[in-house]
Amino acid sequence: MLSVTIDPAVFAPPFGARTRESVRAYVDTLLHWKRVHDEGHVALYVVERTAEILVNSKCYPLRPWLADLLRETRFVEFDANTIASFAETLIGRSESLEKRIRIADLLSEQVAVAPDIFNEHIPPELREASEKTALMIAIVRKGRSDSFTSSHGMVVRKRDNASEVLMKAIITILEYDGEDLAYLPALPNKFEGRSMICERFHDYLLAVDEGVLWQRSVGNDGLERSIRLAAYKSRARRGEPNAWNTQLHLRINPQFYLSVASCSALENPAVARGALRAILETIEGTNMADTHQLRTGNGPNDPEVKRGNDIAWRRDVDYEHHLHYWICPDGIIELACLSYPHDNFTICG
Image (cartoon, rainbow, N blue to C red; front, top):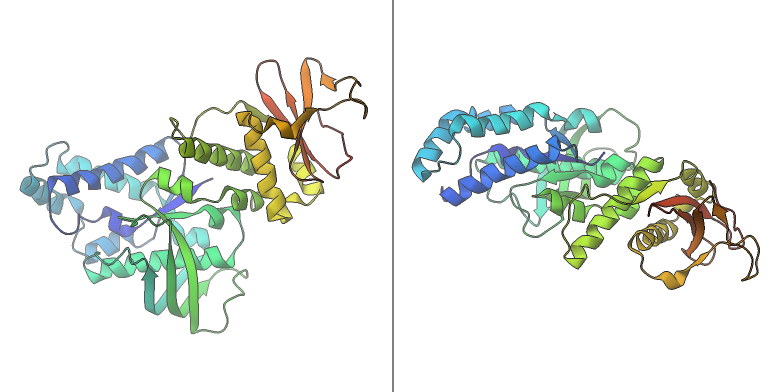
């Protein structure tokens, strides 16, 4: 499942000028991620010390400073108790980032962030917490190759139009419950890695690499998620009305993933991206010159391959790999298999 960690600073009061607009932006962020989570689009995470960090930053419990803030800015859309409940609901529903990534403790020094999106975080304890959160995500993103780390993002207060931050630090203590971060030499270690960032769900979706996500997923569920992400980005580029849960007239044959695995397509980034491109073009009905109907023989007049009223088609991925699929009378496209090598004209289903 797609997932994000919410920066502790997202729950803190607005920085800088205390205006009605800054309060509205604060509330909108909380409501946005509550709605995204309620709709089942993402799993939410927070660092385990989020409430303690906010207490030490003198902005928790939320209700007292919220009441002062709303009175000062004359914000009347919600009362302090309602806004506090939004934040507390998000924190309460979120899972522990440390448990998910198996980092029990992390200490570092000489931390640098580029772009420095945390430079306005006050007090210093809040900035340090944000930096540590981004650093933990960058460490596991660099050291592990799985669907979680390849698609996990961090919700921040502002991103300065960036989709990731470069984290540099000297790591002095790292307690990790696993054996898959062997790239780290003996501590202290000079670390450099990147963490994906976003403010809204749309930003997050545009930042996730659908090709890498598919390569690091297992089974047809990972493929369906990657296809949905590629289709979302395609609609965004065209400026069309867009929603993550837009229905795709698509079905994936249970044998499809096995055909992909049998030709080691996911081990080759070019083939994986080519297959995703071919699937997207099939859904959108573009580049039809790269397609032709499958026939029972090599001759142009040989009968078409059919499954009842379903017609078999073949689309080029590259010279050796081809996408075989069924077009059904109800408009559903069923992905059958990824064929290999060039002269393989079989189709599943």
